[in-house]
Image (cartoon, rainbow, N blue to C red; front, top):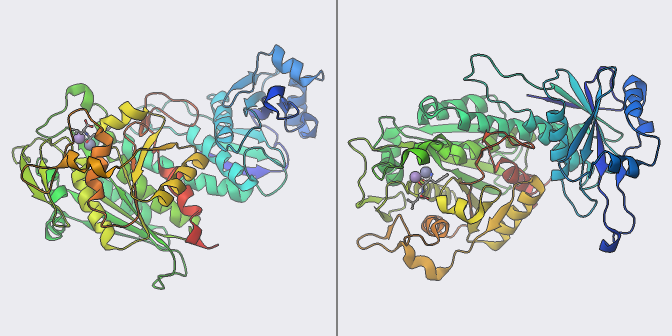
Length: 516
Ligand code: BES
Ligand code: MN
Ligand code: ZN
């Protein structure tokens, strides 16, 4: 993973220097002046690298020169200038306009720098101003560390010859206390990369048993955490009927992982808020007997993203010393069409005693989440948040750029949405109207596991989940679309995105009851 550090001047020998550029705002927008150009004056850059930077930039009016280069400075844009005599190259990094709080501009700028440096090894430097636009210094520092680290993410475990890498170090050059924000961002990025690794690993190498083991390993060295893994017998003894029903079609036994982080000093005093995260952990979703077509199955190792995300968040909470108690519950199983598989029309009894008629075995996520949410509610926490690649309908409604946000508590949902904005993970609310309850009415059981044909599939799924939270404030993130990317760009790489890790961590670190 990329190393990130702060320094007062550009170290010698860097291969690339990033120079942030603000875009102009049109005068008629009433923003006053048009700040198109540098926010760190190049003559403030000293040393040998400073000379190299100045040698590539003009003396002439900056605006005009930038325009001649055809550089708009739009958010996420970049332009590489190469010195005739070799490195360092200078990378102009567009920040977009000054309007509004926006941390993502810094994630994208740092990512663009890492990508522009290409396969060059060594260090890159990023010039930063004393008062960065878009957020306070600590948040901007964290965003830079996240953007750079995540852009450098590679998953090479299955290549006989790893692809060429990228710079191994980013030096953030400025005055002020950048170091602590950078450390915070690096920890967030590490948790994200851990989750991406779990999701990108092929399903046959990431069974419920493998996943539980990897999580145990990761958390074993972290202060304030504990992990419990339930095997099939324990799951049966605990009457997790949803998880057991889905697992029946697979030769692989299910697992349920419960990981807890307790803030240092608060143990047993119960004086800090408690948030329970529940993650869908279907390590492979074939659809079961309601089998998916081949194309629909290709990416279904991704169906344990929710589990990977909530468990990674626990690890990051421990690294960051978050002030909230966090429990992650991850029911894990394959969804396969084996000879003992559940059949359409079967009825199961979930942990809380409610019965579900399973009319489509491919709507399995809600069955395992029903048990997970019931367990969460038994802990009487202050909030429950579940994360799941739950419905194809979410992708239809919102595409890959937004997760759907549903729940029973407006304040919780608003906080999560605000956290998503800061984290660069957009969540968009969908309603959970009372008069849609009949969408999941069953002929013979308390409910069925599908809604009306081709109607509000994401809402119908959440409607079922709502029946298992026992009145506890609850929010549901359907990440079916954003969990996976089909291209590498910005700080996202092709494959698993671990979408949700950053929004959840932002929510937990900004939690009002978290203290200081
Ligand atoms: N894991 C899928 C949802 C999914 C689809 C995630 C595409 C990512 C990309 C889920 O288990 C599923 O199959 N849902 C069904 C439910 C339907 C049968 C009611 C769906 O959305 O088609
Ligand atoms: Mn499914
Ligand atoms: Zn699924």
